[in-house]
Image (cartoon, rainbow, N blue to C red; front, side, top):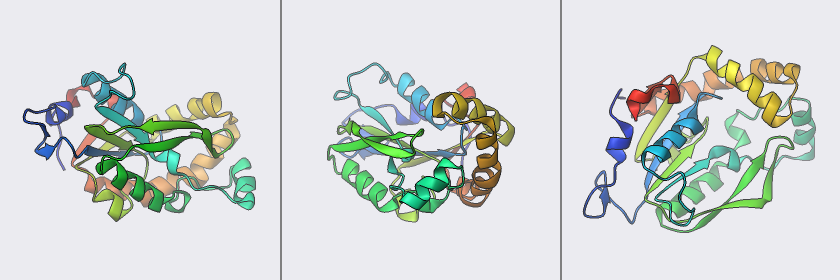
Amino acid sequence: MSTNVGITRKMSFGINGKLNGVESKTPFLIGVSGGTASGKSTVCKRIMEKLGQVDMDHQQRRVVCISQDSFYRNLTPAEKLKAEKGQYNFDHPDAFDDDLILQTLQDILAGVKCEIPAYDYRTNSLMKDQVSTIYPADVVLFEGILVFYFPKIRDLFHMKLFVDTDSDTRLARRVPRDIKERGRDLDYVLNQYMNFVKPAFEEFCLPTKKFADVIIPRGADNTAYY
């Protein structure tokens, strides 16, 4: 593990078609993990901004970002009922299709164009009619709460970042986000957090912090890391 290393400097596109010693034809795969609402996607956005990739056409981007949320398993009818009541654990490793994640990342590393569905948090389902096409890129950011949990997936990353934000800040961010963006009410959000999110973070996410090459305290607020 390391501290302030200047992430975007380490990822700057080098000469001779190489990035950090990796041939440009093989994407530089970066895993970005951390607890819920820790700032993972914001960190990814900051990295893309620093590398001048945010406003580029998707087919021309050299840096792309993929969310682990796009790989939630399809819920059974019984699981859907639990989810509607806030009784389904979306933060457990079993909630994700790790085989599909592995295959997709392997395809990306092989330079294969992939289609990734968006996830609808209001209906707890994948939106197969809203698909993002991931074209071959130089850098691929894969962010999520459990991206370091599965060994076969973890071993694919060339760099691993852990966004380390305190639990009070994360909860303070999650509550308004889930109410405004995901159509939850306050009781639903707090019950889900106490019963599933917090315990799952402590059991499954936090222990993977030790695998990180770089730990980013305070997440995107810590500008010293870019």
